[in-house]
Length: 418
Image (cartoon, rainbow, N blue to C red):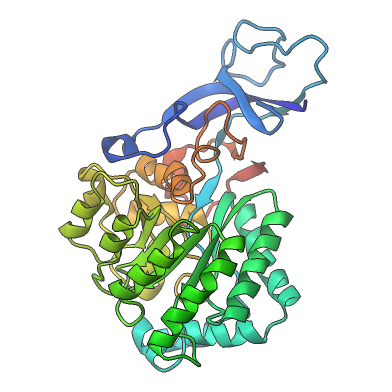
C-alpha cells in the first residue's frame, strides 16, 4: 500500500460529505473548508484529513498524534509533502470538450473579427465542416499526437477529469477514428477521460439532411463499443427536436444522452434532453423560464460554456436564475477550434464570476463537483471526500477560492496530484 501525507495545508477547500453528488440551489454557494490542515492519500484515494496539531507552522508532524491517525504497524513507509501553507483543492473537471481535432481554424478568427457570425461562417461551408475536411485527411497517429498536446495543456492547468467528443468526422470512418483516438488518450493519461459520440454535430458534406440523420443512427452500434455518451447538436440550422428524438431513441440502452442545446436559439433541446434522461444539457446561452421549469426535479445537469460566449460574443447563460430556482449549474470549457479555443478551467471559473455573477464558491462548485456530475464521475472526482480519487491541485502559498477567480492569470499551481 502506498501512502502520502500532505501536511501544513493552509486551506483545504472543497470538502463535501460522502454521498453528495452535485450541488443545487443554495447549496451551490457552500463548500467545506479547513484551515491549517493535513490530508492522507492511500493507494491513490483520500484516506482521511483534519486539522494540524498545534498552531500553523511548517514543523515536522509528531507521529503518532492525537489529530493525525498513525498508520498500522508494519505498513510501508509513508512519504510526505509539505504544503508550505498552500491551498489543496479538488482538481478541475471539464465535462464538455472537442479537443480531438486537426490543425487550426485561425482563418475563421479573422472572419469573426471582420464581422461574420458563427452561423454565416457555417453557411459558407466553414466552421465544423472545415474541421471535418482536415480531420479526415489527417492520419490517426498524427491526430492523436495533436490531441495529446491539448490534453497535456489542460492537465498542466489542473484538469483531472475531462469529457471528449467526436463530431468532426461526419462520416462513419471519421467518427470511429476520433473515438479510437479518444480511447487511446484515455489509456495514455492519469486524468479520467469520458468519450462522447457526437456524430450529429453537423450534416456531412456528402449527405442530405435525412440521409445523415440515418447515417448517425446506423453508426450507434459501433460507436457504443467505444463511447460512454451520445450527443446531438439540437439547435437552429443543425438538428431539430425530431432528429434528436430519433437519434436518442436509437441510442437508448446503449449510450447515455448529453445534449448541445440553446447556443444559437431556443431550440427545444433542453426539453427533449430531459425527456430522454440526459445526464447534461450544455450551452444554454439562450434560455427562457420554460427551460428552467423543464429541468426542475430532473437528474439532468444544466451546463454552461462561458468560453463560447466570450469568443463568439454570445449572451452568457442565466446561471444565477437557475440556482435561484433550486437547480445546480456546471461550467465547462467547450475547448474546440472554432468557438472556444481554450481549455483553462480557472479562466472558465473566473468568467462564471465576472460575467455570470456567480460567487467564487458557486463557480468553484460548478467547475469541480457539478462538472464531475455532468460526466458521471462525481462518485470519484470533484470534492475532498474520504474514499474519492486523490485527484488534487496543490497551490503555491497564499491562495484561496476567491483569489483563484480574481487573479485568474497569475500562476498558482505547485503540483497536480493524481
